[in-house]
Length: 322
Image 1 (tube, helix red, strand yellow):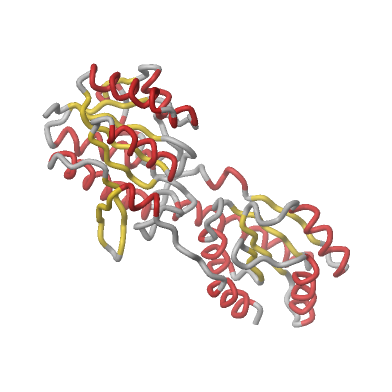
Image 2: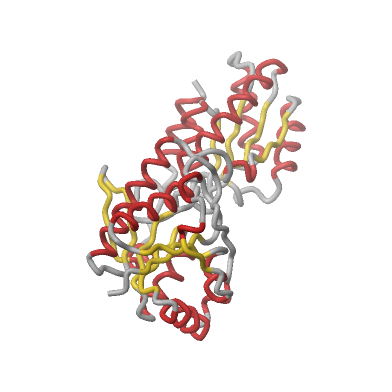
């Protein structure tokens, strides 16, 4: 078996990706592999933008956010001919194994290379926490902490002026960032794809909260749920006569230094990935489930969906409105 192994990150970046890259390189070297880094995701394979890890300062990147080796969205990789070309480039370079770090699309791309004969292991790198068979993805905890810090600061100024803030967070179609941040910040109302509310319904709750004597109200909203965040806030202000501001936490959720939890999670997953490669395994995705680092078939991971309910959102709203 070839001892050359490559690493790439793909899709949206997340804090902790660099920790995973660094740990993979060091674990690979420790196991006798020759690690390579693919720059700019799957597109980097086609462009032959592949370098020896020894030529890169992998030891100094663990504490930084984002991905030091770059990432691109490359939808053309769905084409089988492009997949074959990518596999041939890797094979011609003597690279027989590949570890991919990213979300759902990254997993699917990795599986296609697995079918082309490249040994592939996938790590969940996304702030959205929307990968199945793992309780947490690399980057989720860091993004959550960024949201909490931002909302805490908004709460300070909202309390000073008796204001309402409508805060939109990322997560794509997974409500975890909205739900967990609402728990951590005491958000009076959380609106998700499983728990939608109209401006009229939200306004009644806002008024009730101020009548109870609260100096501020925070409404946490999952992205893509509201057609227009600013318009929603304006409607609440009109209906309540309470100054209401819209705030998008935005891309700062993707940046910043990864939390200790994400660094540790990424490192443990990286070590497991190298163990699996060393055993000749392929087509597997690493996850953190029930307190243990585990591996599951990639096809099972990408084809399984969890039906989320509004139960937790309603419980959070009920508790935080007291």
